[in-house]
Amino acid sequence: MLLGMRSCGICGIARLVGVACVGVVILSGCCRPAADVVLVQPFAVARQREVHLTAREAYSWRDGERQKCLVVFALPGSEWGPPAYRLYLDLPAGAGASGIGSGDAAARGFLLQETGQYAGRSNLSGGSLRWRKRWLSSELALVIDTTAEDGTRVHGAARLRERPQLVKHFEQLHAGDVATLRGDEQ
Image (cartoon, rainbow, N blue to C red; front, side, top):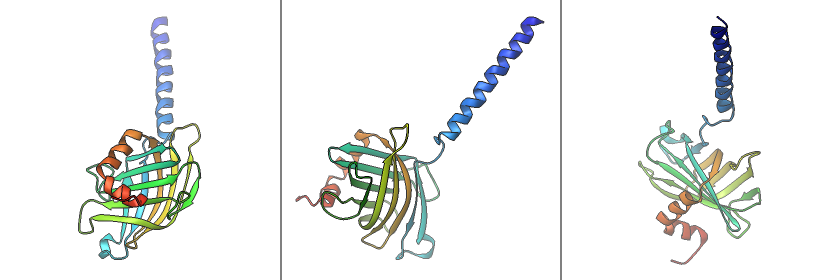
């Protein structure tokens, strides 16, 4: 009988620990998407004028004096699936906030739409970005409020994980786009 009671006590403690672990996982935000943005495209047909995008993949990499960021979105309404949109940003490292523009102190970037009638690249031309390192984390918190050359407005937020190899891979695949963004000669 004593052994049976002890067993129940141990099971009860194990259950409490299990519930506490699940609570920590939920509260830590690991179940939330890495990014949540809205694209407002004034030129698009009615159902595509305002598109809500969520992403499971959002990465950053500090390259000397610049912080490079990549957010990969699936189709609207889905967090999973093949990339449909990619937002690439090149920020002045350590600044914490910047307007979109040219020069060393400015942020720059582009939006790639990879599928659909409006597929193509659009450089960001205005707006602002704010970012900070998250407390007790290696993640970067980013607030986005920008406009693109084609009139698209991109606004929302992202949590970026440090993944240099993934950002570098994107930069290699899209070397021409990245070089044009920096103003490099081809």
